Amino acid sequence: MNYVLITGGAGYIGSHICKFFFDEGFVPVTFDNLSKGNKWSVKWGPLELGDLSDEGRLKRLFEKYSFIGVIHLAALSSVEQSCAEPNLYYKNNVIGSFNLLQKMIEFKVKNIVFSSTAAVYGNPIFLPIDEKHPTQPINPYGDTKLAVEKLIYNYSKAYEINFISLRYFNVSGSDFLNKIGEAHSPETHVIPLALESIKNNNIFNIYGDDYNTKDGTCIRDFIHVKDLGKAHFLSFKKLLSCKACEFINVGCGKGFSIYEILDSAKKITNMGVSTSIVKRRDGDPDILISNIDKAKKFLSWKPKYSDINSIISDSWKWHQIYS
Ligand SMILES: NC(=O)c1ccc[n+]([C@@H]2O[C@H](COP(=O)([O-])OP(=O)(O)OC[C@H]3O[C@@H](n4cnc5c(N)ncnc54)[C@H](O)[C@@H]3O)[C@@H](O)[C@H]2O)c1
Image (cartoon, rainbow, N blue to C red; front, side, top):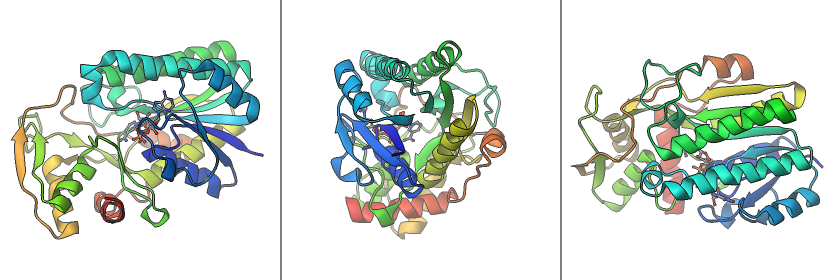
């Protein structure tokens, strides 16, 4: 059997990746502690309950399945929480990844696609951000991801680990037809928050309107979760066919301000929303826009569903089913 270990497979992005790999003939084995994920979203392969901190549990997992590779998504990922409780983030994200890599070495599993983030870059020095941009995270979350990238890179040299680290920009959208979508708790991402406010007639908080951008709100680059699923699949296929040791941006290469997101959400839902300007959240850079030339060239990938209106529309369809 083509077993692929998906850590964090019960989470938002992980569930979409499981679906993608299942459709391509792999057996996605989800390893998740369900701290943030949902049992109902694991539909395309077995769910193995466990925590990355539990080395004995990881050993039993690797004994049970003969994995051909790993997609490593399991992590805590709230920028704001990471600023308030960095200890949780270093322990869960860095030590958890260390434990996973140890088991990969022990069981001779060589291939890993790692869920990294644009947060490794910090405040951009130039735009759009390519992979050669300096990595200077401005929050502990981004720093934990950078630490894991360095860990994997050094392990790749010493232990022949074959890896692609995908640096995601902002992920949204859903595979609503398969009843999976964004269900973080608490939700911290702008598109689901905007849609929740619209649906429930709540005030939408804008975290700062004094950023150095055209309308004062943060600018972000959004990628549809289905495009991200494909990027993982193409990365994994690459690892199976040749040696790789790469860091690759995945975004759509365009930026949208919070006001632009709200305008699009209002049009798509045909509903209004009240807003309130509140203080900035810790650790938010002004602008993040990706250069995705490397993903296009190296993975032969390009975003297909990542038009901002399609992303919001698919998120809206999911929100109407889910919440
Ligand atoms: N959502 C985004 O926009 C975005 C952007 C950049 C990077 N990422 C990265 O993508 C990955 C997935 O993000 P998501 O939005 O699907 O988050 P999510 O919280 O929905 O999924 C993460 C999953 O990992 C599990 N998990 C966390 N720590 C674990 C541990 N120690 N042991 C076992 N399971 C554990 C959680 O229960 C959850 O199911 C994360 O690594 C995140 O940092 C996400």
